[in-house]
Image (cartoon, rainbow, N blue to C red; front, side, top):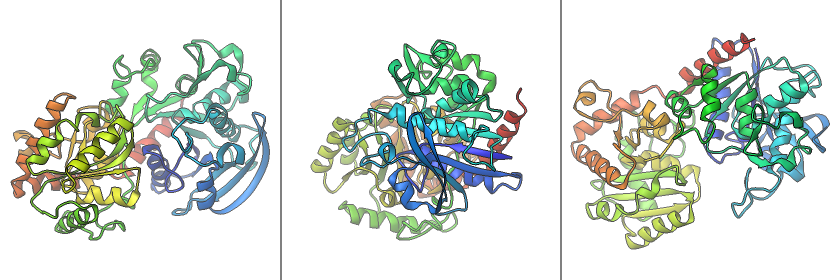
Length: 486
């Protein structure tokens, strides 16, 4: 089985969020399955960071794509033997800023072209005109809107025999662009309609993927159900309902080579489920590093997140002073909404020994927050899967979450029944509100006071299977199902 994995980011080459973690870990996990007899390659834009980190790069072709001259390179992932096909076009991809936006956080005005080229190259790799003359995939897995045009190009232009899966990581990001892009993207105007890639008079990369792919997947079973409803469907619930038989929800895993408290190179002290004492050492070092009062008896609450409405962290500032007055400490790492950044910064200035606000993203600090915190807070309004709650389980840091998407599929609320049967792994809000978040945090803190009870919850979480091995096999099953579709 030859598989092409199309993505706009992949860790450790470049990362803005969970898509990169999945794109870096899932292909590797599939390639390592004893049941996988085949070959898997990634295709992605050749951002400056990608070109700097790939190993053994070779140029295999120079082609014209949507009016752009591109070099097609192939190299190796720095941490594995996986092949990565990179699209080199300096004007499109080698810019200051991030993969999707400039240094001021504004979306690149030509994102339609930048990811149209990615989608078109991915489709060409699945065609008889492929620049890879000796390798054509049996199946392509496309990820999020940035690769959404790929199945459309494959069906409408290339008449490709390669099967396609379109994976939804977050339905809120849709890649909708003005109809003026139609000619430049070389899309057939006849399909700019409701039964095609048109969405409210715009070209929708996301809809193209949802409409033209042979199969659809998303990143948790609960999210697969939720997105077929008006509340979570973002306008696509009708289309998803008609394709419900083609939609599969598979919970993400985590890369346990990167995220494992026993071997994590970022930690000052490693620890395990059997010997967890090192966790308190990490907490002490984290408190010291961030200027918090060094106090083993102060509950440390951690947050690593984009600061957006989706993540629900706007529920937190109003209740933090009460929790600080009860002895809690907070460490926050993230960026996004400027008002929310300012709220947390003000609290850090008001309570310098108990609140630490760190704007931006730092891989090293994120690992230490996950390991050094006593509790991890993640009150998302919706969460397709989420990875941080899985890291929390693996690191013995019980998560506080809302009952949505992958959070509902991965975290079991602590109550008398779940505590008794050893399934309790965290704490789940009743409703998405500041009042419910406060009640849930206080419920967790009350449990934390009993070290024996808390240790039991930690053990339950650390015993959960959160690696990619199980989910990778489910994806392989989906690949095999897709190859059998007419």
